[in-house]
Length: 253
Image (cartoon, rainbow, N blue to C red; front, side):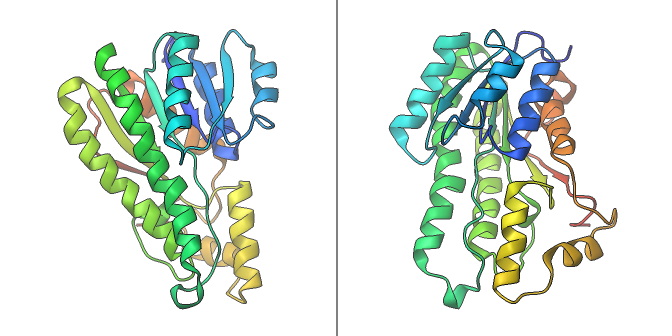
């Protein structure tokens, strides 16, 4: 197995992509700490996969003390962190810049950017002391292009690509690889929320719009994103760092 006895910490583990990633990493032999805002979605997954392989913790990734506690809890439970998947994220409200309240920007940046920065801040020293590791940040197709009515979300996903590139330069000498995975539209709760937001705003049908400009002509599945995460977490990607990995059906082409 590609990740036998490796320890993986995943934030946003209760969401569609997060749960798929947990299953894929466990299937490849890893032990996984599942982190999310609560344990309602993660504890059943721990019960299913086994407490010898998984554990879960509630964490608000925008809070410094909670992120520090999350990292410490993972090390105490499993002894290390070999792979960190910074996957927690929120989409925010749908609306144009002129009519959107700044509080929406603050909320999105707190989770999507500050949360990633805090994760890096506390995980990097652990990996450095352990001789290396792999960090995978969930960005988005929205991180490489603009789109109307989602400026807060797009800005946050552009920002984490910048964080990734800086972290890759800083961490390379310590054998820590850092990359982003950039999903397109994926069949998850988040995409349903975005569809509903576009409908409420009187915007064009989101699914039809996305499928029309996606060469593969469909939404992705969470498992397709998880496969890329496993690749980047494993030694199969041992010479890959500082890069953006699109998993978007060709939407950004």
